[in-house]
Length: 143
Image (spheres, rainbow, N blue to C red):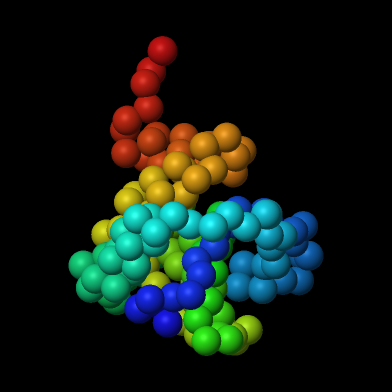
């Protein structure tokens, strides 16, 4: 699916109000408008997602993921959705409507975030995540 997809689109995700009985795994999201991802960005993204060094195997994450963005790969009538929770450096995969897998992407989180930040520079969700990631990495200017 990642090798020569027909189309690659990306949108921002906004969590719907969570019901008290739902866990984070059942959280639903509203999709923003999709944008077509430029081919050079697609190449960087696919490269990051297909390199073993991007992933942290056998890692326990001590955060509750809130997914911020979704990339939609289309090819031959099939759709692969990759949801990104940048604060936790986690992805979730859905293939043709079925949850498939997920994992920790510590090795590629910042690189992938920068791609989406370039596509959505004024989006509140992306700006909020940029501030969180910058604080975490100690890069936020203290004025």
